[in-house]
Length: 441
Image (cartoon, rainbow, N blue to C red; front, side, top):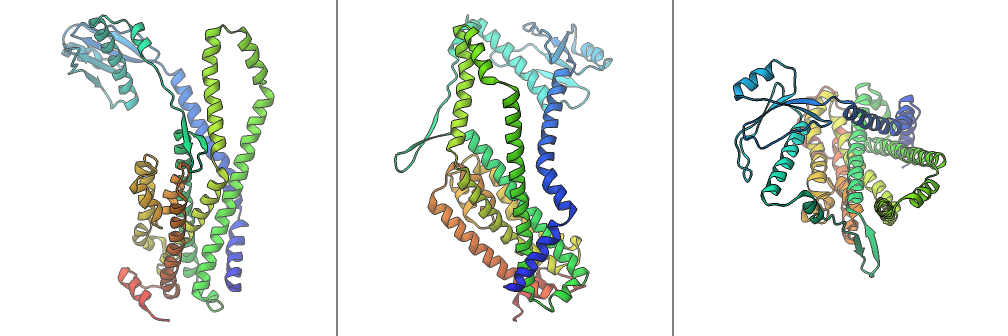
C-alpha cells in the first residue's frame, strides 16, 4: 500500500506542478462563460443591427397583404411566375415567395425560391408570418375579431409540489431540474473521458520511454496501475473543486457588484407608487415568478447532489480509468489504441445519448432506471436523474453495482496490464489481449 501511495504522490505532483494545470484550472471556468456570453452578445447584436431581408412576393390568390417588418422587406410582384423569377434573379435579394390560388382551409403549394439554402430560422419566420395571416383570414370568414380571440386565450402556470412519504410538501420546477441534470450529466461524461484518456496517454509515454521497466523493478505492475489511476483521479477532483470555488466566487462578486450599483429595491418601490393599478398587476407577475424560482432553488438539496456527483465522478473514472490503463499498456502509440477505445467509450456514448433522448424526458421510466443501474452507464445516467429525486433503494443499488463494476474492471485490467506493460513491438489484437488475460501468475 505504501508503494501505491508513493506512485499516487508522483502522479499527482507531476501534473499539479505543471503550468498547463494552473492555466487550465484558472482559465477554464472563466473562458467558457466568457465564450458563451460573447456568442450570446454577438447573436443579439447581429439580430438587432441586421438589415431586413428582401422578399419578392407573387400572390396569385390575391388574399394576402404584406407589410414590412424589422426582419423582412416585401416587394410585390405582378404577372407570371416566370417573369417574377426573372426579376428576382437580377437582384441580390433573399427570396421569392410564391403563393398560388389556395384554399384557406387547406393551403398547399406555397413555395419559396432562394439562390442559396436558407437557414431554418428564416424559413420558420416566413411560415409563422403566413400562418398568422391565414388565421386572420379564417377569423374574418367566421366573423370573429382578433380581440375576441385574444380574450379566449388564457395562459396557465401549473405550480409543482412534491409530497414526500411523511406528507411534507415541497415546491419544485421541472425546468430547473432538467437544466441541473443536463449540466451534471455532461460534466461527468467530459471528466471521465478526458481523464481516462490522460491515464492511457501517461501509460503509453512511460512504456515507450522505457521508464516503466525501471519502475516495475521496485513495484508490482498492479500497484503501478492503481497508483496512476488514483493519482490522476485526485488531480481531476482537485481541479473540479477549484472550479466550483472560482465559479462561486465570481458569481457572488458579480451579484454583489450589481446589487451595490443598482438600488433595485428602492427603485422598484418608487416606480410601483407611480404606476396605475393595471401596470402594478402586470409588474407583480414577473416578480412573483422570480420569487417562485428562488423558492424552487432553495428546495433543491445541493449538498446531497454534490456528494452524489463526486461519488459517481470517482466511481465512473476509476471504472473507465482501469480499462484505459489496460489499453495503454497493450499498445505502443495512440494510433494503435484507437481500435480498443471505441468498445470502451461506447457505453459512455450510450449514456450520453440516453441523457437527452430518455433520462431528461422521462427520469422515472424503465429505460432511465436501467441506464442508472448498469455500472458502465450509471455515472452519467444517475447524476442526470438525481435532481428529479431517486428512491434510496435505487441509489444504493446503483452505488453498490458501480463499486462492484470498478473492482471487476480493475481485476480484468490488472491481468492485462501486468503482461502488456512489459511488451513492446507486439502486434496486439483482441485475441492477444485474451491470451494475456488467461496467463497465470
